[in-house]
Length: 206
Image 1: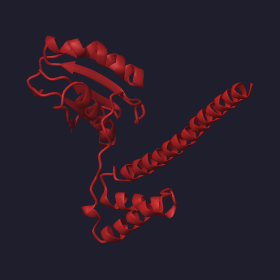
Image 2: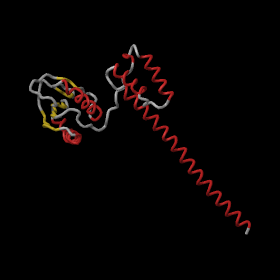
Image 3: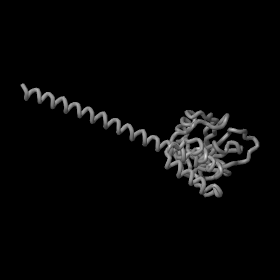
Image 4: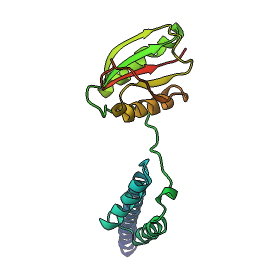
């Protein structure tokens, strides 16, 4: 009986330590997962602060992160503070970190965003349906999609916009098109008094 009792006790202890090990392991894993998430969050904040095309805005964004204590890790905060002091008189040397291109098209950032899709030959029209679907899903209005033979059009694809206030939207469309279709896309401003704000053309090339 004593041997049987000892065996039961050993079994219970073995199970207890197994459960304890699982619990402790889960707590430790959870702790490091939280730490890694915090580090990524703070890294993302710093990278976001460096996205602006304006050096002064990049400097001010870094200052804001420090002054509002959004950077929690003391060593990271100290490093950013020292970097700000170093670049204070020459913000031009603060590098711009461009946002990664997105595989999905974001919603329009301008009002009344209207897109006209154009191609220089019939072979290019194979992209019409897929492109229209993605533009519609993102919230853009499709004016039309057709083939034109226009000697004034370049061979290379491009995004045409006609009003300076549409520049940022045109750049975002060009970024998406470079990622999704062709690396040659660029956003180019054209003069056309008839084109109202929000009107943008996607030229697929010849």
